[in-house]
Length: 370
Ligand SMILES: *Cc1c(COP(=O)(O)O)cnc(C)c1O
Image (cartoon, rainbow, N blue to C red; front, side, top):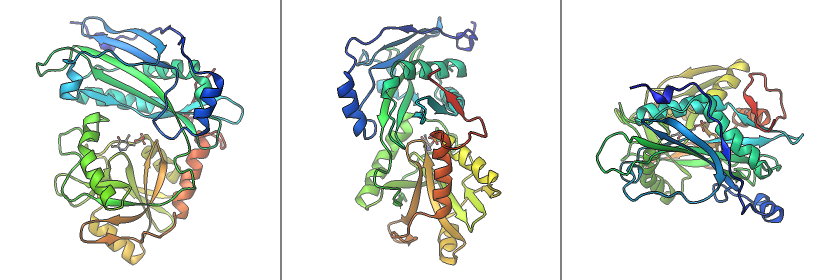
């Protein structure tokens, strides 16, 4: 059998324009206050895959419900992966995205782990480009706003037997997103989950799959009940060191010249934001250590003043300062502490690059509209 998924021919996309595209006034009303993940653009991308034909039938079609058979494998066995990246409008009106090849490569790694077919990096980037081009009027102009792009892949074979599906679909949808912190960047408290883990050795922690998120929802509810914005997971094996939040990586600032972040052990999702922050910190002459960080180190570091700032990072919020870690029987840090200066400087530098306000010295931006 030839490996159809490894085809090197780029896909060409058929376009069916929506007959129900929103009028300018309706779209502008949405863009005035988009929130996050609530509104969707007029089109979406679909690409089908079968064992026999590989990836085929790439198309941009009107946004709308998918027809899914009740026996579709994804509904039963959660064979699903996704990505998240953004399109940014620069001051001159041009539209760009940030390191899309990183998301494409991560989708390939996630696909391998979930026994799904790999989509080429070129086809991934072309799919988001096609969608952003036809729905370019949905890319907000407001500062810090963006068009959030959500590529995802589902097993779509109508078969209840447990094995990797032989019919798969890849889609991209897009959703305008307002500034994550509409009233200025505010530090959050996070909740230490003592009962639950996010990932275990040999599991799917390094894959961006919906199943990981399903498992994080109950601990996330516990966090909310305890007045916290997010849940922090420890490593599943020893329960002593920090892995990450449900959907964000974590950094510790030591003094003014050192960052520490948990090393990638296979249970942590390799964030594009994480990788970019490591680079920007090194560019500033900071040392970045990727290693285990125990809760004891966190407590002692805050108490002694060695740890000066803590933050979380991911595409949606970019960088979120963490004021306090709360657990059932202890707290680390002061809930009222303001956002740290290094945290905010890194946040500003990264968002400035993404929005075209500073030179893109690492070649991280890809133009989407020309
Ligand atoms: C997506 C995600 C992140 C952040 O990754 P980015 O590429 O920076 O958006 C971190 N942790 C988990 C579990 C994730 O799913």
